[in-house]
Image (cartoon, rainbow, N blue to C red; front, side, top):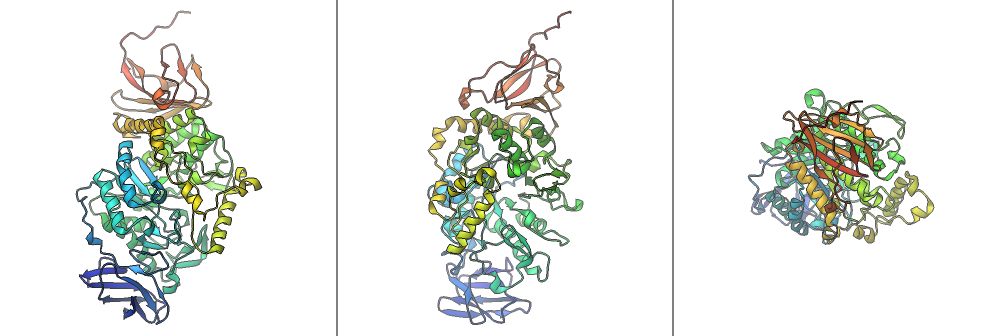
Length: 626
């Protein structure tokens, strides 16, 4: 018979479901359905398959060798969690309305990372749907969902998923997820999924009952055993993950993926598994383009090179360098992995022109070179951010960035993030100045495992001297406590309370989208120059005297009577006029001032300004004879 996917339960008629599973450890395998068992036939290569009289909603497990029964490794839904029975799902019962949705490309996107469990008070797909119009009005274009593969417990980040094909029951049903994506598409929002292909969670993973070859014991990462993508019997394992990529694109209409921690995906195969999954996902999308980008701590540029160049054909990478430089500039926090950054103007100019700051130079924090050459890559391939789930939580209190710096500096850095040539990412609530923290929370396992998770988290935070003392450690939020999770839920009333910050983000995104030059990001070329120790300029060039200047001053007020920097010179017969300023009272600033005149430049303290050329209406002032 013809199946859509090589593994899992697929309905083939009104009351018939075909099952197929890879279980080389089994001599016999049966579907345990209520009080009945139905033997499956061995295909001779570790796979078992067969048809059973049951339909959508049927609960089942796989019984191995007439003994214990376990959930389906490719279960489409776990209504009662990873330890209980799997559920047959009919993917065609949902009627999509997004047949004419366009494809999504990375350039021009405003990405919004979100955790469904804390996004709304109820933490469900249904309630999240109600907030989608607000995100659309804010200017968001692409939603990035933190992982949704099912995991044990009542709450968690999602990075310890164990049922990779099953959207977690905590947020609703698979049908609810489809409705969320369908509604997002109706509003013109793309939706991508954060996928974790570097490890399985420590609780609820029953793959070992079916095969010993899913994991490799010789290679560990930060979260346990690595996955077997290149050792003995890796073929069905690779098939499992490649199928997973196809599945999310085809059956849920996702617009792409963010690949988590790819530095911990070990694979020396001819085709790196991340590239293989990405190419299969693109094929599954057909003519519709999708977006694929990765997190990679080692900053391996090959991820975004073509296969012909020895790369993996992704569209982009997260740029931790940009974030680290920004945090040092905003807070002065030079500790742990921030140690090798200064937050100085030159770092932001380099990031605008070249993406990664470290492309193979010495990096003292790791006592080794960091990064790989990427000078030739486009700026929009680098996803930059002030906040994401990891970086907000990697402080003792999980405080938002705006609470760790001055209002002026925060406005200026937000302008740089949203007007720079990179692809900007906002973390949920950032667009309206949320004050709610984002802490690490997880309720996996028994008491012993929860204590181990707590210990590991506290030890991780201890790399920061500011979080290492006994009194600070004693006050850290405990990951397994419901209160820790509840504190992280967004307070949507802040959207109105923090109107100035809402306006700031909305206006900057609109300017980026609608301005005749800024909308092209790096196209046309960008250069930059340091003006003073804490101020710099980025110039966006065009062919029709339509250049833009973005001037950032993170320091005190500067009066510049001598400005020996050619990037500040207007085109011939033009003068600069202010297009936008963070000084506006609309954003909580002191009010705009006239700062660009022929005699001198005045840079307000802790400010961002955008200039455009305007034809002169009066002759340029002539120099005095001396």
